[in-house]
Image (cartoon, rainbow, N blue to C red; front, side, top):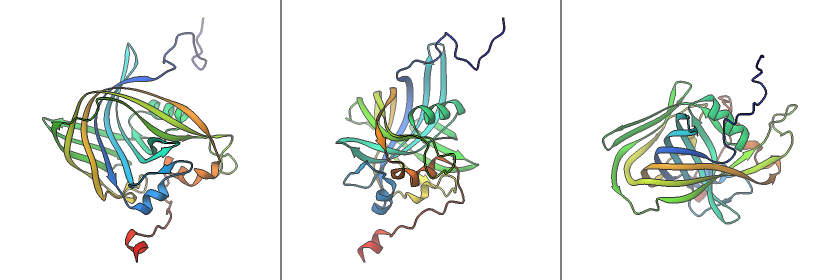
Length: 268
């Protein structure tokens, strides 16, 4: 009897619900330019008082099945915001190792994932973590682990994404519905410590994080523990609400972006 593995077999290879992970992460928030913050946030998400960006660079052991674990590095960045009163972050950048975790996250949840090379080096209390694509190390976070802090060890946090199919005839539109989705990340940290360090962004036409500058770090910590990740669809949205943001999901070094007035120009 022959096999055909382009059809789904009777044995389940992945649970339908959330995925259990073990993580080591550096987490941060930083203030950026208000004009940049406003331009980065698509409808119907709502701004918060401070123009804050969420950052996490993690080493993740994904326990896909009891017999199978995938280890990856992952950089996640988002614009802190709210939706219908629920605090979270609009996820505009995810870069991680492994084709399967990238394609599954993009197709299932609408995550803006890209394949990358990461490092997470811990030497005693010193940690240096990086993310690189196209031979460019465009993100580095480095510093020293400090004392345990009193922040909650168990909690749930949320990231907002958009799930859609780019138009065949016109790639500036979408074929079918565009969905606002929410990632639900349940954290159960065994260790949560302050972190004294810095974030370095380097120019890359493929991943222009330098356009979202670090003006002031407002939170920085090192954590270890477990997470359960899942998600849900919240609603459909008009395609034009997200169309101009879609370029960030792809490598488009020819994209010139939009012009923004600097804060000092706005105050003049």
